[in-house]
Amino acid sequence: MIVGRDIIVLGIQAWDIEIGSNCKNIAEEMARFNRVLYVNAPLDRNTKKKANEDERIAKRVRISKGLEADLVEIKKNMVESINFIPDGFLYDMVNRRRNGTFANDIQTAIDRLGFKDFIIFNDSSMFLGLYLKELLKPRTYVYYMRDYLTKNPYWRTHGLRLEPKLIAKADVVVNNSTLYAEYGLQFNKHSYMVGQGCDVSLFNDEGGKIPVAEDMKDIAKPIIGYVGFLSSRRLDIDLLIHMAKTKKEWQIVLVGPEDDNFKNSELHQIENVHFLGSRDSSVLPNYIKGFDVCMNPQLINDATIGNYPRKIDEYLAMGKPTAATATKAMEYFSENTYLAKTYQEWVDMVEKAINENSDALQTQRKACGLSHSWENNVKEIYKHIDSFEKGWPK
Image 1 (cartoon, rainbow, N blue to C red):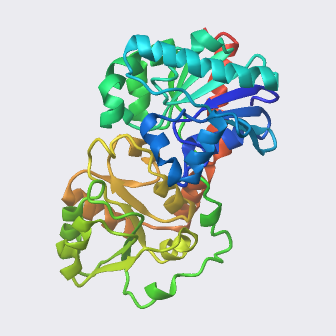
Image 2 (image 1 turned 90 degrees about the horizontal axis):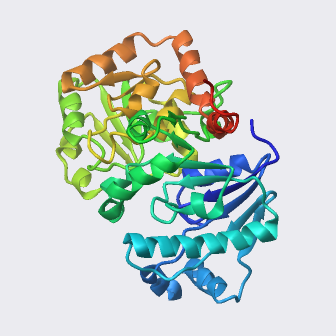
Image 3 (image 1 turned 60 degrees about the vertical axis):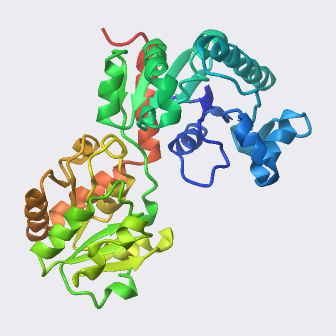
């Protein structure tokens, strides 16, 4: 446990982003017992052009002109630093200059806040974070990997060369996937899998008080279900077709918005496949409650192979038998899920999940899902920071 420290969090996503963010959740948890400065990534020229359309961007422009305060208290122990530097080409000379300007902005916040002996927690900012260890001289520099960013064209151009350099110079590298941890080990022996947090309080069905959604009550059993965005880039449509046709007594229930490939797929012509449409996140537990087996029928590709699947924690927190494609990330859940590689294995694993469900297995699954809190995730991160600061075990 780390208490009473000063921590600087570099986010590649702005604090006021509308979607969820691991980095924000981690920063909030760190701020429970420490002072945390959350530093937004600076504006680039293309983003700045959208100031007339987006008040959040307009606010950053006003701050860059000195028209508003650049340190904003978000909640107790948390402030947000919104900085602006000119954009430029990310060649080494220009990137070092950008790092210097960025570091100077952060240093002014450090001086005003009186931060000392601080930790830098860098959320995958591989370009602007490349030289900050040398420039700001933190007590500990932590690099956090939680996505396969270098598969994205923007990050790939320079990231394939620069990210390994940053990993190598970090004091500690923490990752939310076994795949990323193994990648980090190629450049730094202190690369660790720390799992991921998840707010599963909504999915805690202690006492069985969560009712089954009304529009599921007339669907026959057994129900094999999925909740989430139905994306053909991530989910295997052909697998779902195979399962539905092979096991006509199973009801395949899909809850969530569809992309065009799902909308135009053969699944809509199969009698035992049910599309229930998009639902508010607050009622998703009511749908999961009605599933006999939850599933995550992922394709294996750059978008899925290493990503931590939050929905698995949600499924397990409700004690549900859960089947998933055997990706590298799913190894973390292997003791509490049914993993499959081939279509036949999928059918066999779902069948097994239905047949061997028990109160004891439900209790085990709930304990697993509920244990993956942000508090426990940050404790794992702290453990490795503490080991570094104490000189690493010999």
